[in-house]
Amino acid sequence: MEELQGSGQALAAARFVAVNSIHCEPEYVGRFEELFSSRARAIDDMEGFLGVRVLKPTREGDPYLVVSFWTDGSAFERWVGSEAFRRGHQRAFADMEEAKARGERPPMHSSFSTYTVLAD
Ligand code: HEM
Image (tube, rainbow, N blue to C red):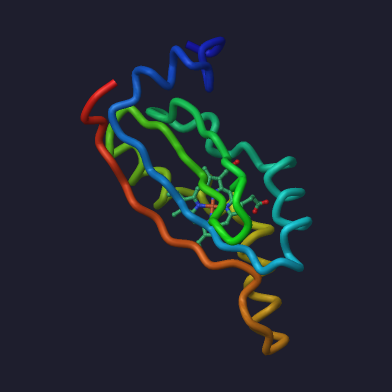
């Protein structure tokens, strides 16, 4: 399965999709994109994880979308509760904490929704 990770073929097997939607402050966009271009990849070895696509909006003001593909919902929930989730977000969460400590507004806002696949 290794060679299929993140490929279209692996994603086609997904039955559960988690979408994290992130609004970035304009001055944080460069740092945000740099974080994702060097992401921890701690998620990549999680059982049931099939791949992720990080989508950059083409229209100014729309959110970035982090779309992760899973075999099922319990695999996603195991990741959210895991050390890999914490490791994969270490720098992002540190940036949020530091902004808070400086009394600044958060550099990004995030909310997520989960989906099952209705049709291919
Ligand atoms: C306050 C909540 C969250 C914020 C601000 C946030 C933001 C970020 C940022 C900036 C990164 C880049 C990695 C880094 O830190 O260096 C990241 C990684 C990631 N995020 Fe989030 N995220 C949040 C919660 C979530 C949730 C709930 C999901 C799924 C629904 C998600 C999915 C992912 C994935 C798949 C990665 C890649 C992890 C890895 O490579 O191991 N994030 N996130």
